Image 1: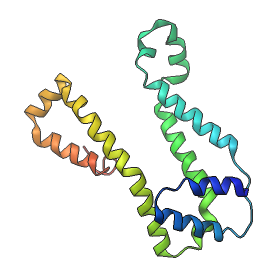
Image 2: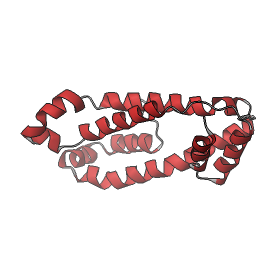
Image 3: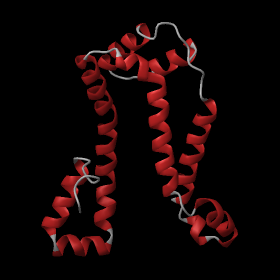
Image 4: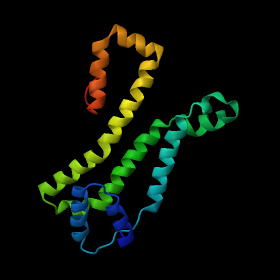
Length: 167
């Protein structure tokens, strides 16, 4: 990876802890450069675009877009899996060598900083979508009939455990 790409990845990190880890990553890369994987980044973009278009409601309503929806965007969920697998590969490819030499404290700081960067947006999105969800008549009736189930499900979602706890 060339120094410009490495620097752009490092400057993307937000918190002080991530900045400290990024400088450790930069210092432990030993000057060896990995080739940039621009085609894979382009594929990540296309996967994200497929997911975006699969969520557009007007593609389902407007007849002139039916051919596009049925041929390209009907299975947007496959784009999510592809995007996440590819993102994991790119992150591992870029940081593997540097992270294998770090101590446990630096790795813990990296993951804490990543969580601090991602979770607030996740929580904000949840809180913004909650009033819209409650405003749906079907959902409102379900909340009234089974309030404990709703609270349980909401707690699982807030804690980001929906993949680990059966709902």
